[in-house]
Image 1: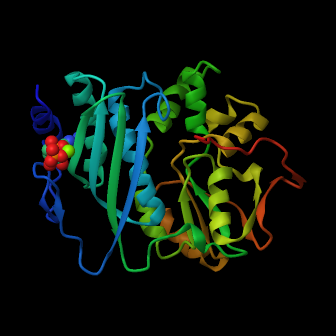
Image 2 (image 1 turned 90 degrees about the vertical axis):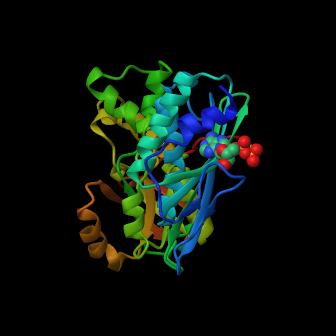
Amino acid sequence: MSEFDIINRYFNTQSTHRSDVLTGIGDDAAIVKPLAGHELVITTDTLVSGIHFPAATAPFDIGFKSLAVNLSDLAAMGAKPAWVTMALTLPEENTDFIQAFCNGFFTLAKRYAVELIGGDLTHGPLSITIQAMGFTLPHQAILRSGAKPHDLIYVTGTLGDAGLALKHIQHHLALKPEYQQQVLEKLNRPEPRIAIGECLSSLASAAIDISDGIAADLGHILEASGVGATVNVLQLPLSQALTNTLTAEKAIALALTAGDDYELCFTIPAQKREELEKKLASLSCRFTCIGEITEKPGLQLYNNGSKYHGPIHGYQHF
Ligand code: ADP
Ligand code: MG
């Protein structure tokens, strides 16, 4: 099959057709019409086989996750996703792989009415680069730099489950069968917190998505905002799967340091707490206050009254 046949057969068959896409897949470049009076928010992320996902990951999950991590970045900005492009490097022409990959990718794209408007297809070691674009109202995007002393720090969902799944896959531990599906899903098919991000755009002072562990990612908010934080590690939201598989100490260490959670960490002024709880109540996603922003720089971790001395370093590529 030629490159163009593959594109037409697998990538140009999506069911999402947005009215703001004037020219999609097929020309030298795409043409879109951004909504008047809005700001455009753009992000890109690459997933390399063996680095960002185990080489044996199911192709459906690779397609799903490569879009999910990009939509998660838009969620962290409070943006509504609209369009994506994809640069795909494939080691071989394996149509079963491509079909399953597209099924995963378009399952998520459809959920958020995102249209794939173009891309590139090359031959080489498996890697997927997605660029995602979305909107916010003017000056409504949530930056990392807006956290202020006394703001409350929240996280969505539970932390450490994707890290737990990875340890299971790598045979560093054995998950009980009743937890396997739920935990592996957190690693392979993370749900981007789009609806929460949109809700937060008028409330949060800062936000980030948790890709490298909460300690590292909250650290980015602190640095960008020129503030510090105190966090009680006993308040970190942990799943039963995590607490019933690991000792309390190891569960906390994993929740702080493991990557790939794709939950949101955000800060809000304390007086907006009630409004936040009201707004998020309808969204069926857990959210938990884990600490407070401080004037004093640095991240202070407490285990109830005493200082926490466990590991805090997240994943780093270099
Ligand atoms: P060009 O040679 O002009 O770069 P390509 O041959 O790379 O064009 O691609 C032809 C068309 O198919 C373009 O519209 C491009 O955006 C689209 N396309 C290529 N690869 C992908 C992909 N993986 N996903 C979506 N669209 C793609
Ligand atoms: Mg090209």
